Length: 158
Length: 158
Image 1 (spheres, chains in turn green, yellow):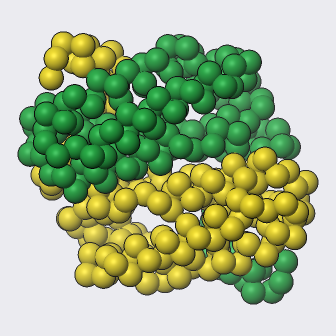
Image 2 (spheres, chains in turn orange, red):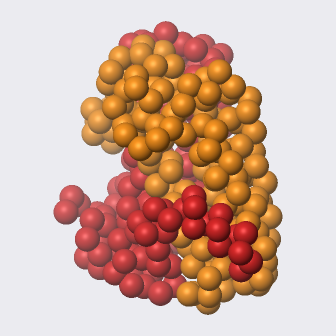
């Protein structure tokens, strides 16, 4: 690494590196906790966007095509996250504090990824919404993808 | 909204809706706080992935093409988030607790988006890394995009 890179990272990312550090493959408690926290951040963003779309679907907020497209785009990006570096080995429920990931996430990774694909497809449909009715119609598939994944891959509350 | 949708949302998303509720356009304190929290979750995920890539670049962890590709893919997805529903009106620093977003985010949205595009491009380059040297080479542009955006669009600590 050259000095520019060191300086850049030093100046801008020191806090980030201190906060997360570690690496997936090392399976330290530190990296395991960081992975769980990152997954929770992902789900927090999912909840934010679902909240926006749900408010429109329920008529609590007026339909706004730009905002709906933005929220749906972000749902798509969240759904398209690669699970390899997030659901790393050693981070199932019981293996690390805060995790609710069932062992099925590891024993059936393809099925787990397929649920995210379901969420991604539902999000893409919502991106094209031009009316509140479109949002309402799209929310079934989106909410269904959440439910389907949680039922199979998420354990009980800790 | 039909009963299936209501049930689905009720069963799976109750916690999410309670936690975030509100909607961008309403500019309530609740939705403003939710937006800031969602942005912080986005940055937390950025920090997690930068931490992974940085650990490889610094030689703390062995290069693993799958993990590097995964972290870089997720950085790309984080960079590609639509800012419209995240940096909503009324959520600049001083307007809502916890925000460090400068008014330039609103007065120069195109420039702000261009910084994320810079981050996205750097992430795409890193997705193709096949060696630790590739990761080191790619980190300069990635870290540079963080720095460039923070300098112009992020205010001092609260």
